[in-house]
Amino acid sequence: MWRDIVLNLPELKLTVFSDYICPFCYVGHHRLMRLRDNYDLKINWCFIEIHPETSPDGEPVASLEYPSEQWNQLMQNLEAVAKEEGIAMAEHSFTTNSKDALLLSEAAKEQGREKFYDLHERLFTAFFVDSRNIGDRNILRELAAESGINSDVVELAWQDKKYQQRIMSNYHEARHHEIQAVPSFIFGKRKLTGVVTEDVMRSAADELIKSNSG
Image (cartoon, rainbow, N blue to C red; front, side, top):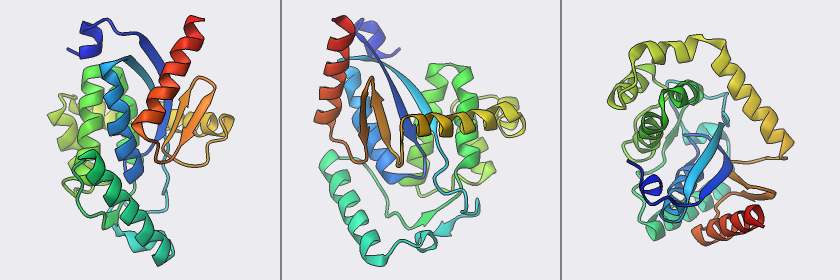
């Protein structure tokens, strides 16, 4: 059972725009989850496919066509942040198409909080720690099964157009909030984007709770 439910912590509702192949989304997820010691988090996960042009077979990160100097700086920053936070992370050497993973997560939301978050964690870990290709449907089937998600649910995630429509709705929601990058966190009227520290997240959370109680 979730600690926040046991301790009857104040409910904190927020929206997060994210993608499982975004390394800074992975870091942001870890930082956000630490807020569970003070809040009962109710997160509206809005998944956005940031690189639809990539192949589900996986591609070297060079295919993203970042200038080499910019990419090297990004990776140095990422390595420093991961080390500082104590977050396990393998060398980020390849990328993939995340659409099927995002659709699967949308379907997993209907299976309950516990199964959704189990899969959510497994997807991040598979890609950033174990260097597994989460664009591969067979790997996604394995991860879903490990999370206790029925195979029928998995196949439906890729066949039922309602899940694709939810991804499109996430894009519309992002435009509404003028989101141009992930991760982005919406705490009430406050928007945080990019590599946001845990302290800043806590400040935004406290501000939102105070405004709701006032």
